[in-house]
Length: 492
Ligand code: HEM
Image 1 (cartoon, rainbow, N blue to C red):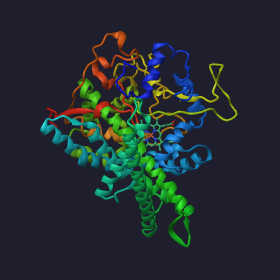
Image 2: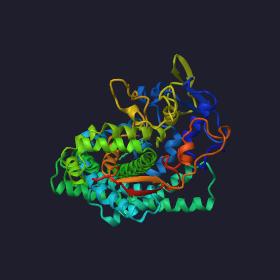
Image 3: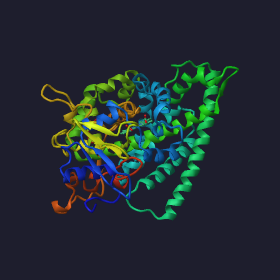
Image 4: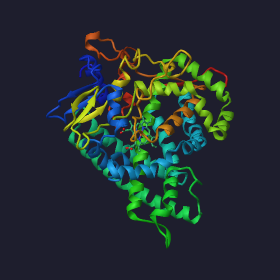
């Protein structure tokens, strides 16, 4: 533990254990944590991870459900399983179809222009150190709210939603921490979270009902709007309304939708904002990568910000031509995957057969370890090298297999918001990388001898504590991601 800064994210520990005891080759190992936690079956090979996620989808572990349900509600997809999960998946999946996601690109670009660029300009002018975590959170929450709920949320309501979301995240983080928290502090956070959830539930329920009334009043058809809520409600019109009063939704359905809106706001916020922080950190440390990014942006979209905005609005599919930009995001998510999931044994099947060997699954927390797979040299050669080119296909390079890169996990339960998150990040880079240059502040490079350092990485020699993600609702960059930004010297 002493190799790591406080509250290092759990995935890092599995990776360190796997490296220290040479466990990656075996593909699966067990950790007995009694009496502190459930016994764990750790899957450190992509083929082993596929068995419980893609080949079959094993049930969520009870601990995950018990952790998420009080935060998201009983009806949220992330905390559901079995038949209930299937119904929720059918309800949400149409809202995340690629065409729907791409139709939001113009709106996302406008929000980046209106929320992020002015903030970066102000910080560039002052030259002061600022928290990129806060900056990214404001932006990503603004995008999530707009994409999920639409433009009917006022500025004040958005500010309240963001404050409430932060109370929920703060409490969720306390539960996940590896160091003890003062019980009084914990109680205070619990109280704030409780009030935040009540406020959000009440707001979202009214919002859903009012929006449905408006859709019925304006006779909006299924495909008219691309917000996630409108897609859900458009599809629900025929099944969930009283035909004599088309604007009436059953209270049960309103609760299902509002729990899932909360889940989406929470699921899409920290994960994407934390990834954005790491993308900017990696750009700050790799000027050559910034140069390549700018070259690609110039080639595909040109260099004039107004023209770029127009192209995003008129031809959002052009974002798919940003191969290097996509590779930068993928490589960042490889080194710093923010998500985590845990499954349990499949009913009636007490073993998992991997490479013809049956492994017992009874009473195990089954963990496909994204972080450990991403740091395995046999899967990703020179794993601690930040090398976006490994994701760009050329005549001589083979890109990693989809089962090896798994920040959004795989199979039916893979993150439904993955395309949206990737588009958000592409657009943000397209609208900032040319004009701004980032610098990390306060990084203390690791100087202890090798024997006292972590074995699975040498990134700490370049990034200090930033090499080790911090435990939060998702695994995030440590210390608020303190940075400086300046205007690029390039002509735009
Ligand atoms: C970089 C950004 C993101 C990352 C790395 C990420 C990662 C993940 C991971 C690892 C899972 C768990 C999959 C599993 O249990 O097998 C997940 C689930 C989920 N994510 Fe994301 N996510 C991101 C952004 C988003 C966004 C933008 C949204 C929605 C707006 C979203 C909504 C969800 C939902 C609803 C689930 C639960 C799916 C289910 O249980 O079927 N995520 N995500």
